[in-house]
Amino acid sequence: MGDQDFFWDGVDQGKLLFQRCGGCGATRQPLGPMCPECQSLEWEPREAAGRGIIRAWIVSKHPTRPDANPRIVILVELEDGLRLVSNLQDAYQDDVRLGMPVEVVFQNVDGVFLHQFRPAGAAQ
Amino acid sequence: MTTLLQNTAVVGIGQTEFSKFSGRSELQLAVEASKAALDDAGLKPSDLDGMVTFKMDPNDELAVMQNLGVPDLKWVARTPGGGGGASATVQLASAAIVSGAAKAVLIYRAFNERSGHRFGQPFAAPQQRDIHVSFGLDTPAKIYAMWYQPYMETYGVTNEDLADYVVIARANAATNPRAWFYEKPITVDDHQNSRWIVEPVLRLLDCCQESDGGVALIVTSAERAKDLKNGGVRVLAATQSHLHGSHEMYNYYRPDLTEFQDVRAMSTQIWNQSGLGPQDIDVALLYENFSPIVHMALEAHGFCGRGEAKGFIKDGHIALTGSLPVNTHGGLLGEGYIHGVNNLLEAVRQIRGTAANQVAGTEHVLASAGRSAVILGKL
Image (cartoon, rainbow over all chains, first blue to last red; front, top):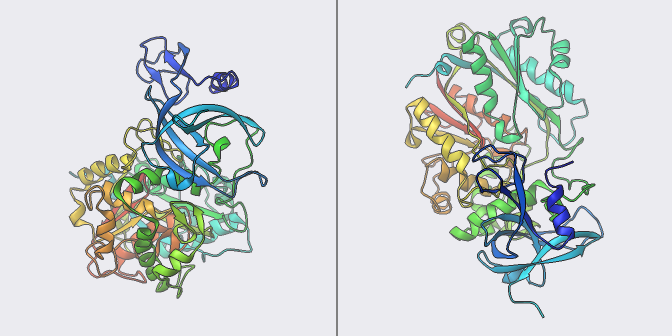
């Protein structure tokens, strides 16, 4: 049993889950067993907003899997204030900027089901 | 303020050659470097009763003592994390001395980091999904580039700007016979023509070396140092800083992503301990796994303002002839990557006056590794 298990269960259901502290209500990040604000071990999963902005990005080449494509790796700050690492889909490297609005999608990437993001409003 | 740690000194340094293929075991590198440090100090293995290394070091203390012939070890400690703890080795050794836990502590770090396990290679694909690795953050270059990128975009630092530092580091290495890149200086064009490793942040020449080699230092009391062969170099400050929310590698979760906040916190401590300030530092050895961290360390230590490192470097301040020579041995990009502990050896040489690129009149040297730092000075 790992501290990240519930997060991946959420991804499998198409949800970005985070931990809301059962003691003080604080948002717990990064994922972990204890609240650093009140030391409570209690928490409940809440669903995060699927929208945020890019706070850092790079292009990942020479990937671990030889058959994998280059990816734009991003650090997203969600509207809830949570940060998480993901990939940016449907965008060109030259167009990526800090502060760019993005929204979540859930996809298989090289055989692994992951949360991904695309430029906000790029749907349809 | 005088601190207890100031009653300690580095009295010996030793190393092997830095290469891409040592042709011998990591344990042999460790004990060769350790024996050289003992000889430099004029001490015998039987004088040692403490050892400090990295949590990540492959060489067990008992194996090192077995081979060196140390009769009885009373203090063993290891630094947390990776290279960020390079300067913490001195803090741990000095703490053992002033507490009475040990009388003479050997610091060692040795590995075959090119011919053996290479740090720069991609991690194996994770068995289970991982919040970082599964998205393509599978090498140190990518992981660290993610936290340099917001700094660079925010302050308008381009990859070409990084060349200004790299050219200086390689110039210093070119005149340091111990350096892997001895007699191999580069130009800005060489830097810009080297291949991308992580767009838009790092090219090949922004990356530290993968090196085989071993280094060692010996710490004892400042009082005892006075009677030793090469005297001693006094520890003026030694500290660590690991801020809440920080991460050794995936450092993406503290509020401000455009400042190296652990260094800022650490800086406050070392200036307080030593009674010195940035203007008093004659030479700075700044741990650089990759070139952009030099910019962030210069700013967080207060050598220049936030966002000003690019101009500070362009203006020549960190060259050998500048107001603050940085990485006078060539740095981890130019001399070799013994996880930053080779920076401590250069710090000792600059105080002794024996460095290959000696800066005249050096009295205070900072060796900063991101999450640990020391200031060394005259006995």
